[in-house]
Image (cartoon, rainbow, N blue to C red; front, side, top):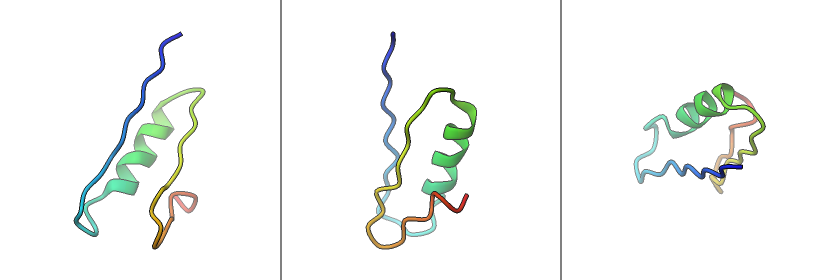
Length: 46
């Protein structure tokens, strides 16, 4: 079993981090993903 961790980070607002994470999650199988944005976590909307 191979375990891979991918972190997407940027200090800029509106850079597309959540959209990119959602795209990776949609392509992957058997994954766990979470939105660690403390201000506006909106990965569940996408």
